[in-house]
Image (cartoon, rainbow, N blue to C red; front, side, top):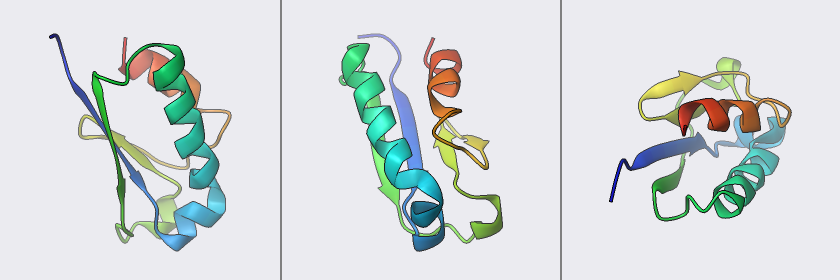
Length: 81
């Protein structure tokens, strides 16, 4: 089946209010648009106690901090290539 990717996104109140709500939707749209739904496990996480670094996303154990809606597609393109 090929490689499977794991994406974990913090949904704690700080990250959520800083934009991770929109980031989740962008990730879902990106996966659907690029037919990656069956290759990516997308999970929300409760607060990870890194609020000052948020919003943040972990892709295959690689952490991306201070993610904004303008950043996430570029990161997905690089990490899911």
